[in-house]
Length: 495
Image (cartoon, rainbow, N blue to C red):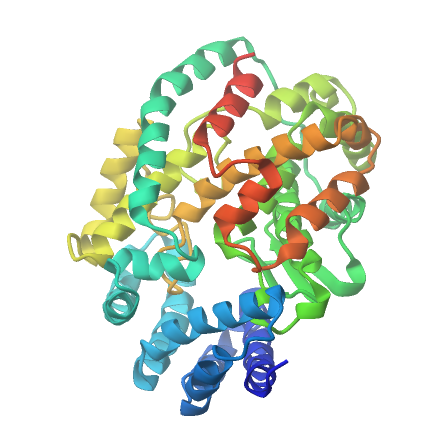
């Protein structure tokens, strides 16, 4: 192995470990930190961001990369690692230190203001902070677009979906927009026959947490390398060796929090399955957010709302809460977990209407980044789009444009990966079922190890060695095909 490449691995390990530290601080800020720690945490996060940026953009890194490219003895993993190093270097060198620090400060501050604004449904109170975040994000997009030779939006998308292009997303989303209205109406008509009832609470939070942990353990979550906590917005954070999950509980309804836990467990299983031998190197990281989201949606939507899983899970739910009566029957839970109804909240949306939530956000954030829309236009545009797509209008901004954390903490270009991930999940699970003919029987018995082993071998263990497209072709036999997802929806909701 060449000396220059070896030195790069040492430098990138240090950069990666600093990123892990920032990730843990971010988790703590969302799950544990008292409100009075916000200012100090902003300083900490800004310093870590600056240190990582300075290390990544140093002249030494650039020189080592140039030299490493000429070293001919790299194996496939090392060559892929060097390519990922170069991708990160391009993104980092596009931004100067002052802009990196300004973005870190602005997003940390805006996120804290958003937390209060969301609870009060007060968009105006967070609007000035969001304007600053958007202004800085546009500057970052401009700088990165010049380096990458792409549009402003695609420059941001590339951070979450390497090599992703809005030109590729547009026809996929157009297909969904054409399919969803008539399909949604057909499903709603069919479900008029349903008469499910929500099990009656209250459901103690400690019991809900215990139930979630029971299923996490069954799915393969390693509690020696992770934990479950509470936050305003459910997420999976931490590091592959210390995965931090959060959810939010409602004592009147345990079903929503449970699916939130299962969703985040899918993310966690992916993180834990990344190649151990490439920890702290770019090639050992997850291969983009569409694939990451596919793993959470594979667990939540493909597996945990299936007949096979519910046959296994409902008796455990019933025993946990000492449930009795018709609302605790398997048929009731099947109807409950497949109920389709247009709603305001993305994270609570059903599998059919969820793409509409994502397409709405994708269109709005593109318009905002490209200067076709401004922050003050968001509430009205959001409500108008929601009415057009789903036929409903949020009663307040709390149920509308304040519901998601993403824009307020600087994650622009992220939203399309949710629906791309749902499509990818359907395609991967279809391939897994073909490779494992008894997998659904295994799930009914509460045995998820065959599926997890297949995912480890065919998805997780590759890290970022392959492009998302190539990994999907390798594991499923074809690139992303929305018709696989559409077939899944038809089979589950109209068959």
